[in-house]
Image 1: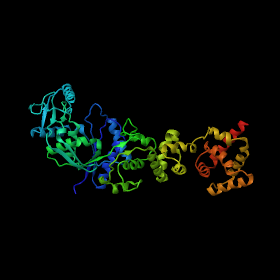
Image 2: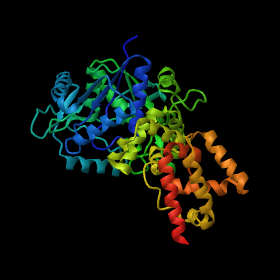
Image 3: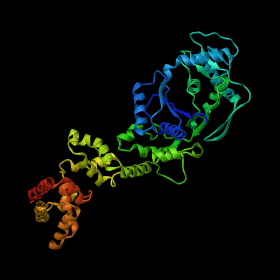
Image 4: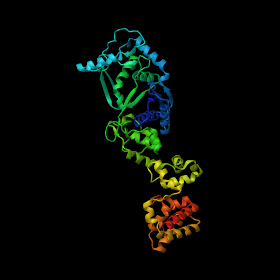
Length: 470
């Protein structure tokens, strides 16, 4: 079998969003499944809108997701002589021609065609004029005027276009810059791309590109068009309809493996399985199992997947990730805490939080003064009646050397027996003193992680708070 070669070819005119990234993912998975090559190509011929910062953002997004390319990045702006060579081939074969039609006049003629009930396509005025190159001449492809262009799409099945519906498209603008449909074909030919996997919005481009392949006597790649992703309220998910830049998901505390798992399931399935390891995705991925119907973006499902991967992440690794999100809260001081401390903290929160941002916020009390106390909880639990019990708990904790769960549980069991109070009446004042909140990870875990000195300090602060209210 010929070596499989796929490509992802974004334009650096904006941030990389979910739809484009899903295209990259499917190409990457297909290449990895077949032990092939994944190419990154930057389509930057739109000089006015292309920006270097978006190139960097695209690369950073792909690297964060683990979609590392084997070749590239190639830049179309650096390949202009190659396009010119292929333009000349078509001109020499009589399969392309120069056109000096004024853009304003073209628009008038399109409107006139619409008024007559005709399709607003180019009328072929320059097709047989035999024009030479000039300062205001574009180059058009001489599209066949009869027959049909067909292909067996690996995502959509057999597709055909009547050639009479296609006009003589511009393949090189008057400024010498090739247009998309021509440049992409030349790139795919010269880079040996065997499979073109992309969104179904490119289906209308495909017959034009196939005709160019044929005019250049080049073998066709396999085409596979993916379904679009819909916004929750309907309509294509887009920058204007809920799509976020990929790096925003990173900054919101999503894990890359969660986003990859989520994206692949928006347009592909392997039975009823929902959660896949990276290795499983590579092993199972095939074009035959791409979805025929569009997926709908569901943030709750993404959060569910993210919480799953947070739970599954080894604590040392999770601690390292958490540190990055604690830094904005703690500043460089977070680096003073040993990795084991951070791992123990992460272990109390990994089943409670859906994102790393949420986890960092929930972990704040482990690193900083928990005050001010939650107002409603303080009114209920940090009251004069609680002071004697807090004093007794502080005294017994101070005398302890074993802060294990068993020892701490015994301490509170003894007090419930001696005082006749319920566990909640003893534990909640302590919880507020240590965390500032009424809801937190397990109290014994908190006491063990904070350590005797910090626990006693915080109990004293809570007692001061109570006594000042009297």
